[in-house]
Length: 287
Image (cartoon, rainbow, N blue to C red):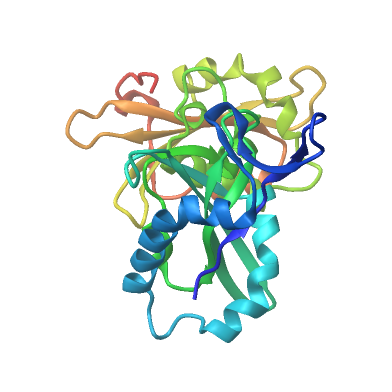
């Protein structure tokens, strides 16, 4: 069974020394007691609990297993991988869905928490339900509304360059870029230095040494432009790579991301598929 939890702050008035529970002072959600607090949110708790139980799989974690994993709640709220703002479930207030990927030994699952977030300091002050789940159908139900936070985007934002899809949070661009970060050499150019090489992007696309086209497993047509820049600003063995997505109907290219590298093995990873001559590729357009 999914559980509730209050993370509301306690506040004492100087006049009476009485302690109040403050969920969202700006919204007037200040309560005399835990009983009043839970009473106010009870209908919302019931609705969310009913929804959860209707989707819960018999093969997912049982109640006893959930109790053993509930210590992941705090990490889910404080360091989530995703947060979704849902303003459709309740008319009175939006709720926020916090999701975190957990790796525990050989077991991987997600921890989900549905919470009220204070409008004053964006702090989750009341948790309606929280639970671990191995069921993708269940946790995907809580990826609804508007994405308010994406840890992956924070990871990739440093390497984004104006005009590419990476900077817009495009899922395909982020996925491919994160995969690149995982396999690149430890001594390669640091990600925070990528913008310093941004001027090489246009030259790479305009006059590439090599152009490679391949289809990924999802049917996306990816075209990689590779250009060598020997001893560019004293960086030995520098190559610049721009990855685009090709529209099969129009042959127009959308720029996904680009990056500099001195890792020859990494460059080889982009030499996959069909080797094209530069004049066979139509002019690219920014995303």
